Image: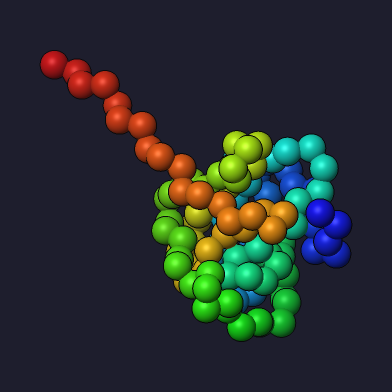
Length: 107
């Protein structure tokens, strides 16, 4: 997908939503540019003074702090560091909340 908002992501980079308070940190990034969205609008580098946009009502499901989100291929993983109302997307596909793994019992 060719998109003006696609950027090269690096592990540790922080992105902020322009439709809500949501922020994520990149845990794993694929090679090549990625168009990250939150609530249907492009995400920007954290700390960027970008104009606010309206959230897409179909993508107003929210992200939760401390949860990880992945793309369908598993090549992109982000950690939510600030909760928000928008749903995350990458290259036009919605991201999924990553399942947590249970720790083994210690007796």
